Length: 85
Image (cartoon, rainbow, N blue to C red):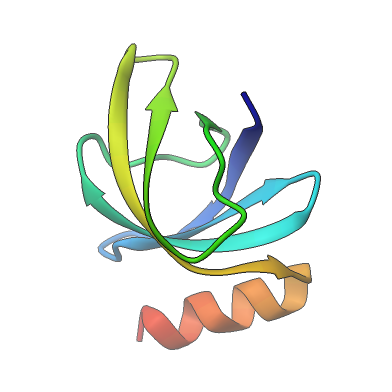
């Protein structure tokens, strides 16, 4: 199962940035535990839309919305700031 790592999250915002072998991903938290930086997320998040992912630390599924994927680090951070104004 593909793994991604949360690399940037701003407090009081549902959006965050993940990194995996295909680049950077902008995701929105929908249900379950809110992720923190350095958390590992297991699941295929390299396409748009709602995704169920696995949080190995809590041993449960979480629900995300993938806003954008395959981004550069700069683009991902810029989009994160736009969403978290």
